[in-house]
Length: 185
Ligand code: SF4
Ligand code: SF4
Image 1 (cartoon, rainbow, N blue to C red):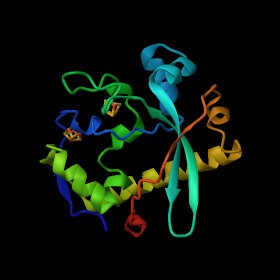
Image 2 (image 1 turned 180 degrees about the vertical axis):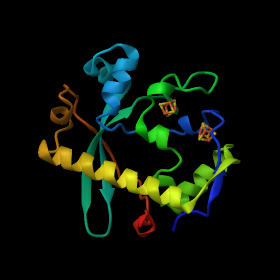
Image 3 (image 1 turned 45 degrees about the vertical axis):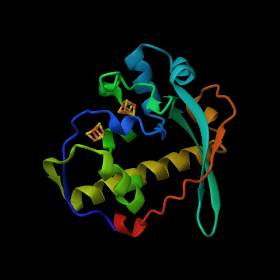
């Protein structure tokens, strides 16, 4: 079930950029970040990302999906400035631009509880309606399906999909998210 409609306005405090998780990139994030830094995609991947293999498990199956994820420095995203601002704000990853309208918050009760306990932007700004939440869930689902289809067409090789040289991926065990996907409809 989606959370009740809520008011939200990001006050750019950076709290959600320093909680030890990771930001996974979609393929289109890489050239955007590369252009921002005037680097090649390979240099961008080498400097700022790590290659992970994320495990997703449910009662029936376990799947492993490779991603490029932003590096952290301690618990902080590598792009988080000392004053809480994002160093790549105009080119930030889709995941960050869509936050908090993400399945890991809106479709996971524990995720939403954790986010709403730390984000000072909740309760301010315009109302986020159930319709806006459902639209965001559909966008994310479409992006994820396209990503998986593109990976499958490359034999699940992220290096081949991105045309990059990547190190062996680091396995990230299943986080036990319990997404209520019926709420997407
Ligand atoms: S914690 Fe909330 S207000 Fe702070 S940067 Fe993240 S989304 Fe914005
Ligand atoms: S890219 Fe920017 S918005 Fe995204 S987690 Fe890093 S500092 Fe935060």
